[in-house]
Amino acid sequence: MATTHETTTKQDILQYLLKQGQATAHELAESLDISAQAIRRHLKDLEAEGLIQYQSVHAGMGRPQHLYELTREGRHRFPDQYDKFAISLLDTLTETVGQDQVSSILRKQWQRKAIVYRNNLGKGSLQERVAKLVELRRAEGYMAEWHSLEPAEGTAQTESGFIISEHHCAISHIAESFPNVCDHELEMFATALEDCTVERTHWIIDGQHQCGYLIKSR
Image (cartoon, rainbow, N blue to C red; front, side):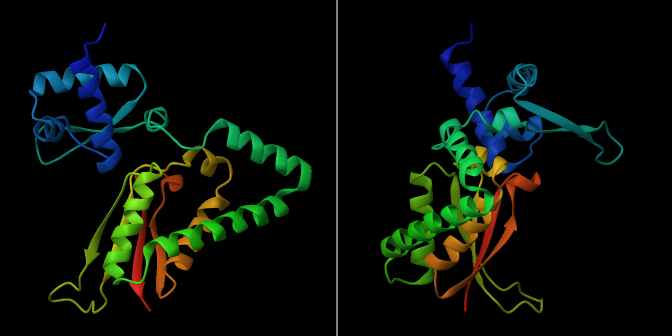
């Protein structure tokens, strides 16, 4: 039986891979401050449980490195706010009123949520509102973070903005069955930040390890 310490370490590995997307055993060992031997034992166990997988990547003339990442089952180990009941309810609604009507209902729901967000964000600077939005998303079960995007020196880039990254989606199960909710979510951000443009840069549904949004002032 695994000890509490071993369970915690394995959870730390899963959370690191959830946030970073991929990592080598060496990177994991350094980040979590445990020995290479211990990290490889945990990785072997997690792979046997079907929670992680790896791909071999050649780097220079040496032996290929193993890049570890979460499997779909590994992602589903993280708690979601809405799960089987919500999916079942949406399936029933689709059978009852049709896909178009369900899409309209979902859009209305996201519009209402956008107003709640906007009221909570207040009238501060864009940076203050982005930071507050990330706090709200974290409270809802999203592993969200933000950083500023400044013009790069020596390039033609002149625009600045902010990137919101969400490494875990609280409605991932719903999005897999009803991917149009992600479009409504994008509209929700644009409504909550009404003086900004919002673009999707990454999408978990497309197989990427995070959802990302680029936010710029109009």
